[in-house]
Image 1: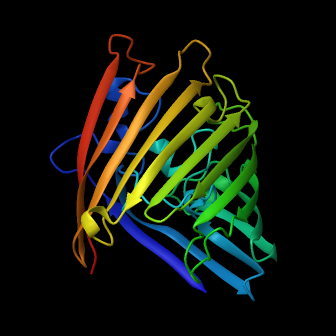
Image 2: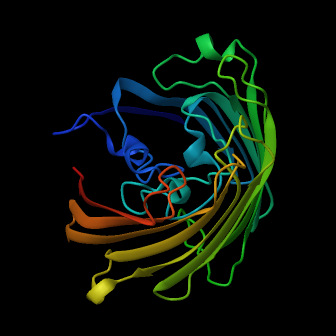
Length: 297
């Protein structure tokens, strides 16, 4: 199977994209991680092959954020938009670039995945002009389906425990030290309610590959709001211990309400509340709200 993705992202009515707004109020990381600026670009271009749903591989220009650290509510187009929900701040997943992974299922409920990617990936470049530095991000993952609720073929599991072990080489030109760490997540659906917990640890310091040393995250999503099948509310709280030991801890609450107006249109508000933003000691609490619209054709 051949897969590709072409996109362009721009601002409207402002010079600061949502992705960079956190620099204005002193947060440790972005509250709208995917909403940056990008020129027209081929974001992904890869080949994938599966064999009896037990073994598979993907190779090419890949988005590691979508491939690793399984979390069913990380799609910024439909669910959470905050950095620690879309990804794990303690795992320095590279941008879109050259990489590959292999996957093996020894049992239907167990998944093993091993991947290697260009640590200096830049979505705006072909990949070969950054990969020749030989600096890699490598990751090994184990996923367990809880099977408390039967899985629907072709859909993510309703319950999953996921462990990710990673290492990143020193990125000399970027001035970033090497590092390694672990990420753990657990999610289980119970009817309309899906609670989740996540944790991450990275051993890098101030110049390490991640902004945090420890990250803990917990939350809940609720489906079928007011009886509407595709409407959803999500709330997640994140506690972060910065890698820079001169900074204090930070807390953040992320929430969204997704409303399916028509089969083609979704709308809804998003909210981020940052407690004790680490780079803004004059503020105890910062509120950031947004409104999201999605059109499908």
